[in-house]
Length: 541
Ligand code: F6P
Image (cartoon, rainbow, N blue to C red; front, side):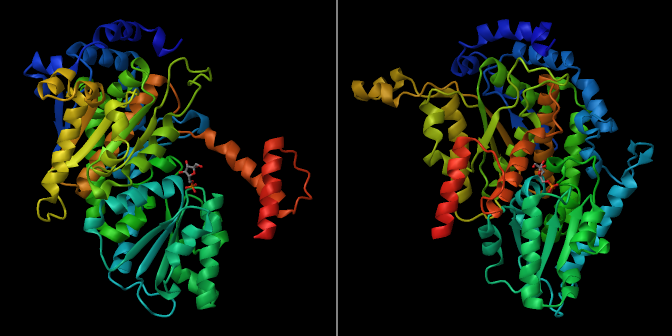
């Protein structure tokens, strides 16, 4: 019996029929308090959710749904380190990674906080040595290039945060991220670099991920081609992993390894040693400020009443559109160049977490689960796909994220950027009627083409400036939004079995390709045809 059979869902369905015809234009006109009442501020992070197709009753009914899904108990279990990742038999205790040293969080009878802070201190000592030029490469030169090799959560989190906090970075360090098994990724990253000034961070929770190990082996060969002596590896490779044995088997000294734990999911691992490249770039103090932002949002999520809880509200609004308006996608548009990687980062966190089609008891879900997440920085998207958002037939709820201050206050750029930011949510919500166009004297034949229906929902998130603290708040906000939705849809948000099949098939196909076709593989006709064609073209090229 899923959530859709409960009272709250039934009431929401009936309520939806009343709300679906309402226009945001009327809702604002009839309620001068609307903007204020449908807004929330949490330690400088402001959410205006008034431009959503909701009434006060919608919020009441949606919060009833959260209660019916037993969200408060689920939040307690999350923070208490209960093994809620049932299919992998693990806790999902990423919140412990940003808890202060004074906290006490027990898992299997052990307080995890001392381990968390010991690794943070190890990271800080290492980062400082690299940043200050004291970490010397094999030939005695300081490190100038740091290359993180990892994929998925071992890449998207650190690369997103590195980009987001570039304004805080030490500019004489060239930080790069190699993730793709496509050799061009590695080749371009090391183009023109000297091995004796380059440090690789091999970042992999399992240390078994094929893409990462392939890139790490290529990096080792590239380094040894230049530096010859195998002793150079100790000066140019460090590892971030939970798998000490595999790290040592690769040839990296356990002393140069930064550990974390199986209770940290890959896509929730940015605050662990997976963030090492970020700390090297921005330093320990800024990294800790980011952790404080995460922790502030964790505390808000843990303690705020549901109707004033930012992640919960955003999650419920997402459910409203996903399940009642049947919106297939959810877009995220940061109006800040530095947040360019944020949508890609959130794609993994959201879609790997809630892209599930069976519920916790293994039965097919009856209601739609996670949406397709996508996005792009503003204003670029405006000159690309916003046409569809304004006048297309699809309903796409959007989160707009913007800041009052720029890290680069040059001429009038920032006010122009933010003018667009405000204009877009206004246009999406209120549109432009055919009457208004007629009043302007627009040619009658053109009126249908120039009409904007409006009534297109958005959230606006705004803070003073994109600081490390704010980035932490924002990231934790989405983590907890996604958790809340997983609770409502009753799916396991912390496993990712859906990535396995493709990985296994790739291994089989790779073996077949390497065995020059003599293997006994029995692929489908299409795959066999494609492999034969590939083999033929590979030979002639
Ligand atoms: O294949 C998916 C995945 O397991 C992600 O969940 C994870 O973030 C990524 O691969 C990388 O895994 P690892 O850090 O173990 O190399």
